[in-house]
Amino acid sequence: MKKLFQKFGFTSQETTIIITLIITFAIGLVIKYSGWKRPEYFNYTEPDKQFEEVSKLTFDSLKKQKLSEIQLEKSDEIKKTADSLLVIKESLPKKDFKPDKKININKALEADLMLLPGVGEITAERIIEFREKNNGFKSTEELMKIKGIGEKKFEKLREYITIE
Image (cartoon, rainbow, N blue to C red):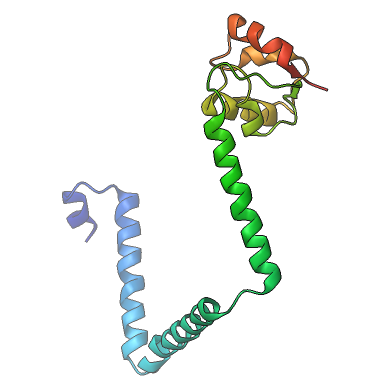
C-alpha cells in the first residue's frame, strides 16, 4: 500500500499518516455499526433541537422584555451624548483646531490625540501602539520615532503635548 501512495508523490511520513487516518476511520465505522455501541448513542439531533428551542425562547423573551424606566433614561442619555458628539465633531474645523490645554500622550485616548494638529486616526493609533509597546513615552521627542511624525510635524505638536 505504501508503494501506491509513493506513486502519487507522498513521502513516507505522509503515507504513514494517511494510513493511520484510514485505519482510525475504519475502526470508528466498525464501532458504530457493529452493535458494540448502539447507533442512537451517536445521534445528537434531540439535544441539538432542545438547545435550539431554549436559545430561541431566550432571545424571543429578551426581545419582548420591556425596558425599565432607569434603562430608558440611560438609553436616552446615551443617544443625546452620541448626537451631541456628532454635532461637535462636525462643527470642529478640520486643520486649524488646536487643543486648549496640553495633551498627555502617555494617557490620551485616540480621540484626544486626533485633536492635535496633523494627527489623524492612523497616526493616533500608531502613537497608542508605540506607547503600549514601550511602556509609555520617556520624552516627547520619542514621538518622532513614529511613522508619519518627522521634525516639522513634531515642532507643530511640541507646544500641545506633554508626558506628565
